Image 1 (cartoon, rainbow, N blue to C red):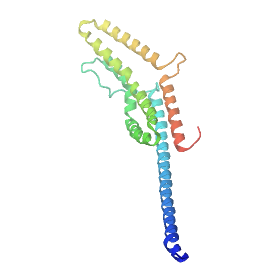
Image 2 (image 1 turned 90 degrees about the vertical axis):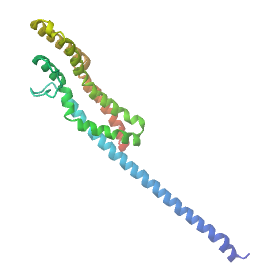
Image 3 (image 1 turned 180 degrees about the vertical axis):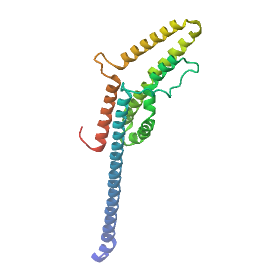
Image 4 (image 1 turned 180 degrees about the horizontal axis):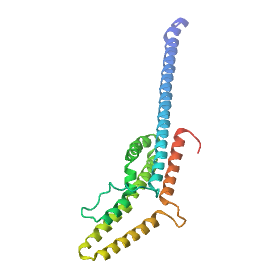
Length: 217
């Protein structure tokens, strides 16, 4: 077999195979690089979107916790059909945090809708802060439902109780309810424990999102 035949039968096919292999490898590398870049961009875009929503929700919760308000707040409260004016006022006041949250329910819903996408790109544990923030929101409704249950129980006695005595019972209920609420939501220094918990959750979001974006903590 002369060198021409060797070149034709062995060398050229080998070179062709090598070229094909290199071309294929280059294509695969290019696809993988594109996917990494595309996935990275999606991760960054999603992290920025989540963080923006989280900051906005923090502002909403600060306004929810504000003691300032106006006389029209709480009017969307579901009250007892035969509630007295005083009972209705108590329920409506207790309902204000829920009403304030409901006015931005779209914001909370949008953040919840991003949860699974965020988990898909950043791992299962990345969904934990979403749950914690949602729990904070639902926790704000707890005092209202406590008031509702207590008022319904007391209201059963209205027909068999002297009006002045019943009015005093309502005052006592309000005072006890308010004391219980304050003991759960504020520490001895007057710090708002709800906002403090919210701040801790925000910090968790920042760590996750900054990591996804590629920023140092």
